[in-house]
Length: 292
Image 1 (cartoon, rainbow, N blue to C red):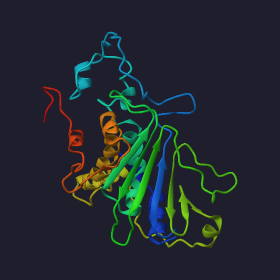
Image 2 (image 1 turned 135 degrees about the vertical axis):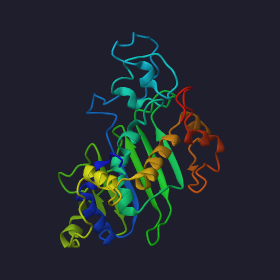
Image 3 (image 1 turned 180 degrees about the horizontal axis):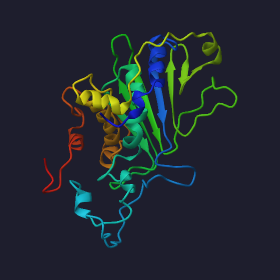
Image 4 (image 1 turned 90 degrees about the horizontal axis):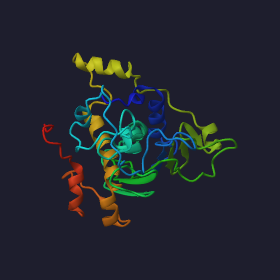
């Protein structure tokens, strides 16, 4: 059971029911954003867009630095990495997209029955080989799924967000994080149907997706031979892989090679057919002594 505990709440279930009911028609475009790694205007949760520190302070007596490094390449200790700020470093973490993406994208994947994208494109602030960029925009293209048409999903982080939409009502804002679904008949901003006239005229279906007993309880039930957990490996695997494909598109080496073109992905062969040199980023080389 992956730790995207929001999947167990009722609100994304009600969202799915409305979208499947066709309240905004076929959804062809989704925008999702977060302020991470920023935390307010002049603060950050963890650093990104920085180079590797050159000073080598002593390792704290209570810290087993080799154990902390684990399979990551060896490097000297620095407080820039530990205890919390490892998230923004390529060797240790997965940046803002990897940190919150599996939470933010989960409701979208369930509502639109997504699995793997066919192409990814990324733009960002300055990139380097040490940390993720300060801010980025990643666009995924997904194929049709049954009667659902192809959909473009665009991710924003670092305070980037989509343009305001004309249907927004007075006082309505796009917050530090949110989701915007764009359909043929209307839009949904977080949990609000837009425009107001559509929201006022729509009667949602009676709730029919069963409630979860709770994220942790799902796991316990599965351990005891009950129903599969809501975010088991079968579900969480493709979701996580899609998030990480976005990070591959942000790699400095590939950004220079792609030069603004699409990174096409073959989910059957799990490879990049037009750019085989990108395949190396689908796997990690473990440090000697840490291989599985």
